[in-house]
Image (cartoon, rainbow, N blue to C red; front, side):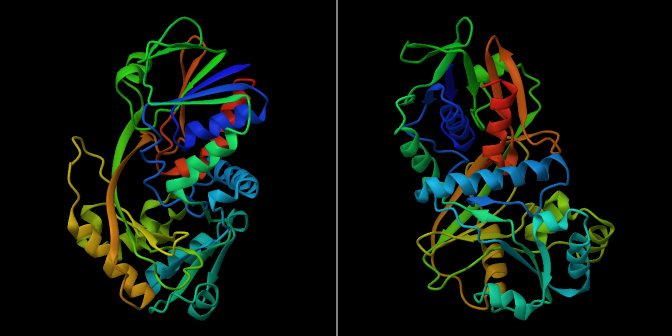
Amino acid sequence: MRVTIVGAGVVGTMHAWHAVERGHQVVQIEREAEARGASLRNFGQIWVSGRAGGEELDTALRARELWEGIGARVPALGFRANGSLTPVRGDLELAVAEAAVARPDAASRGYKLLTPSEARAINPALRGEFTAALYCERDAAVEPRTAQRALRAELLKSPNYTFLPGREVREVVGTASVRDDHGDVHHADAVVLCTGAWLGGLVRELAGPDLPVRRVRLQMMQTDPLGEPLTTSVADADSFRYYPAYASAELDALNAGQPQAQTAADHKMQLLMVQRADGGLTIGDTHEYEHPFAFDTLEDPYEHLTEVVESLLGRPLPKIRRRWAGVYAQCSDKSRVVHRQQVGDGVWLVTGPGGRGMTCSPAIAETTANELGW
């Protein structure tokens, strides 16, 4: 079978990976020299802990299994089963963590509620004051800025894989064939459009104006090396307000009795933090849903994140090395893991994983491959 993948972000690259693994001839087309969107501008987290029970959690757990296997084959991914800690303060935050540990699927997530001393035994860098910490053993991480390059380098070892950068697909012509802006037509048995947050142009023409996918903008930052290991990913209790796994009467009580700080509420924020291979910290993030998006980044969210991180680390944050904004595509119905739609004869669109793209992409691509009979 011949498969054309449009888009070289993590979703597209994982589709290419599964197709090559199953023995098919794959052409992957990317409009940039390499992916530059949300697949690079994220935490690199394989984030199981906050996923909604049911399909979303099952997808994340399967993806976590696939990431580990791929990481063993491609060490340059920087896969590490680092787990995560969410320190909590006070009775209201503690009650939400206790409710999470009482979930029927808590064991599959690897949830444990730890005392401060137990949390510091796992992650000694957390020297700040907190009441307890929710540990999730199944969380993991990779290096987002280099993951697609590492995967592509492995794919290029196969004679069945071709990468065509700097080409934008403009038109579907006939059955499972596309024309790019160089005028070349690529014939295949199946075309999968994994165009990320690019929802205009050809995608709009094929899927129509009512595509149930929206765009979300975020702000993040990265520091100089911390100078010591941050052995787990770290979240704050505002992540309880964001991730569906924590929905409960206890969360309702937290929201009523302990509202978010104003800056966090204004920018729909949570803290997530991961240490990079060079020792720096990736820290975020904000969420902006209303169009048109701002073209600049705002300083207040960065100041808020700095305060939260320093309170957990019990030390000043290293110098901020870089700040950025990103945009990702999310299903309008956030309970859906991804939007998968046939948009032409032999042509499918796969988009809208939202903040789950890095986590779930191997399993999303596997499902596509299974459904299309690859």
